[in-house]
View 1 (cartoon, helix red, strand yellow):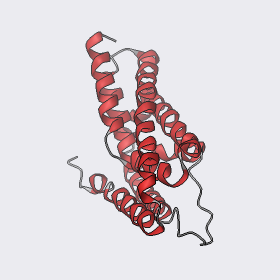
View 2 (spheres, helix red, strand yellow):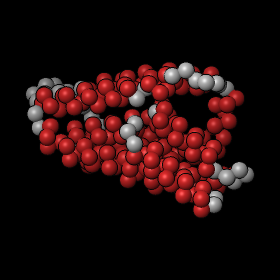
View 3 (tube, helix red, strand yellow):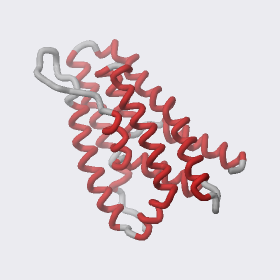
View 4 (cartoon, one colour):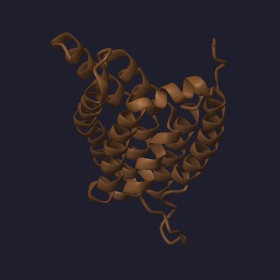
Length: 201
């Protein structure tokens, strides 16, 4: 991989990882509701899960989507359903004190698995592998792209979780916290909009 390609990949990985999306919205909400230590498995699941998905797509799964276009439709249906369920969980993450609830942060495996139904994460992986992996680079190029994404993604998503812990002090009242959670849930639902647009193809 040339220096120009590597520089472009790092910039793309940073820009796409630090901007708002389902992962970052949920990590901020988790930071607010559960604190940074309990959100750590969620953070690691996002970064390592996304890196693994990027690698698998680079090793050939992208071509499978091209040969079997109905898989994209099926993935869209599953993604919408799962994101709506997660939005409901975010909205009800922290009921007022004294309420009976069993809210828990996402586990490592849940966060890693979520990457496969996260439209932004899938787009990031496909674009990175088809744009920055050199032609004929084979599996080494796919590994390098995934490695760069993993290294850049972790501090990016950690910033959102940490940001959630910082605004937690202003959300000490149950009413404010519930309003925050419902706002995050609404943003999570809004993130579905791009994937529901009709495809040009």
